[in-house]
Length: 240
Image (tube, rainbow, N blue to C red; front, side, top):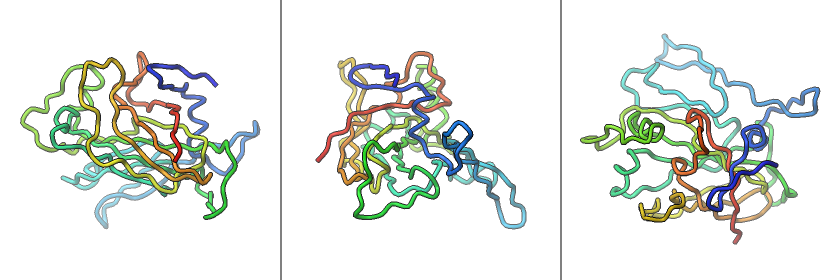
């Protein structure tokens, strides 16, 4: 496993990190599971709907099909059991470019059927995806290092949604995910390390309860990172 360290955090190369993502149930000739196929669906008003397929870890605006809609559609790759919005104090929203974060815990595959009361044996690869939703200006700020033009804005526009971070875990998929209540995220200080987005707790298929200190995705991007792709990060979890 190739792990690259920065301030006590680790991120994986995309090829290795992708093994923690949901898969299809079909095995290739090499003995590996295929990635999940894109999901086809029709979007738009009844009578004038348009077909569109959505790849895993991709998202799009419903405004592309329904004018003035503020909704977004995203594909986590498999059914989701654990999901929760990260709380943001009103005083920190402008600093974060009015960007909001969603923790998503997909199952390993569409056919995976957890048995309540039966613990899976570790290691059992799974992931927690950190999706963001915010204004275009906020994303431009993160990609260029310059402050976006969010002055005068009190809420995000239709903006965009994307998967910023994939937390690679070996305790099986999440049954439940909950962020610690405010305050979150970390305040801007002189500390050189990455800011903390928040504390995320979960229960998992191996019977464990774990707490993760989730870093701010903007602060842990590897050098020359393509912001259209998520980081694949391996974090140490604390068990209770």
